[in-house]
Structure formats: structure tokens, C-alpha cells
Image (tube, rainbow, N blue to C red):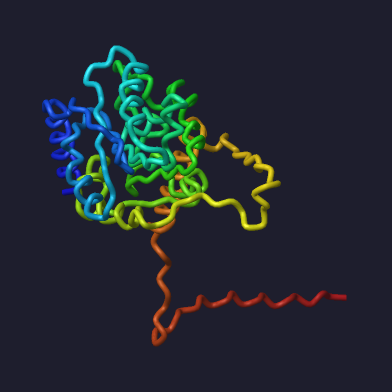
Length: 291
């Protein structure tokens, strides 16, 4: 059922992508949340998410993406011009490949963003883009290996995904996502921004505009004399090749555990039932030696 709804939402996203309203650009000078559409998803596709966040008191804007950009740089510049019209410390909610586009924003536009929330972004790439004109987003592509680490340059980075997606395995998302991981109930990448259950989860996660999301320094540090501490992150386990090996090893462990569970257990004798014991062979009498 969920897969069927996912296909319907994907079709609706594609239809809204070719509506004339998708290319209209709004002024974002009074917005505090900007939604970055995903791959071939129109602005109208995110109207339900926008209305839910508006009801919380946020001022939400939906960005526009080019339909047929001549290059990736042109698509990024088109996106950056819209972000530059927003005030400082804006929150970006990037859906699907919109999270990959945001990773290579120019510095001027990136400094506007205080909080980056990604919804179902394939940070390890996807086989869907292999052997297409978007092959730079293919699984384990050189582009992905080079740029997916740029997410840590945002002051607050929160990768969110459905429990069935594999953008971030559950055991790794907590560390890479700065301890703020979230798993949605309804699977499907396009269902993340349309299904009421998932929207309600996102609303609870965002809170309200009155909630303070400032990143305060450690209380033990003196702001006048404190030196920024360098945080070293071991990125080796986040490499796509290592991720693929870990995924295969987890699948083997699951299959071996399932085999052990499927083995028949030996039957125990009933308490009233007497167990037949095999008679022990009698020892032969020793022959007396003649003197």
C-alpha cells in the first residue's frame, strides 16, 4: 500500500514540476524556512508541507529549480540567488537531491543558512542516476565522495530519513547528524513531505518559531578567551565503499541468524513417559589360570 502511494506521489511531483507555477520566483526577505525541492518535483508538490508549517507560525518559502540546466553550476547559481534574498540564519529543508545541491552552494549563500534539514537525501548516491545525464549523483560516484562531507560546514546539520531508506544507517546517523537523528513512520522518499503522519513528525521535530535553536558554547568556556576546539571526525566509515561492505555483512549476519532460528529443536521426553534404556552388555567371566 505504501509503495503504491509512493508511486502516486512521485507522479504528482513530476506533474507539478511542469506546471507554470514551478518557475515563479518569490521574494524571501521575510521567510525563516526555505524548502528546496527534490529531483523533478514542482513547487506545488510541497504546498501541504508549507501550509502545515505556516500554521505553526513559521514563514515558509518554496524555492524554484531549473528544468533543463545546461550545467550543475547553472542550477546552483539559480538556487543561490533565491537564498540570498532571505534573511540571515534561515532554515533550509532540502528534500531528496535538493540536499545534494545545497552541499555545493557558494559561500555567500551558505552563510545565510543556520540550520540544514535534509529529508531522504541520498548522500551515498543512487543507482537511479547511473548511466544518465545526472551520473554525478550515481551510487559511489566521484562527485558524491568529494562533496557529501560538505554538510558539516553548516552550523546545524540534521539528516532525516524514512526508516526503510539507506541514506544513513541507524547506527551511523546519530554521530553524523550531530545526535539528532529521526526516522519517519511511513516509508518512501516522496511520502516524507506529503503523508500526514510524516508531516506531523516533522512538525514535532521543528517545534515552533519561539523555540531557541541557538548553538551556545560550552558553559565552562569563557567567550572572551575560549579557543575553538577542532573536532576530528573519522570519515573512513562513511565512505560509500565501506558503507556497502557493512551493508553486505549485516545482511549475512541476518541470514545466518534466521537459519539458526529455523533449525528444528530436539523433542524433550514427556514427564510421565518412561524413557527406555538400552541394557548394558554383561561382562564376561574371567578364566582361572591353571598352575
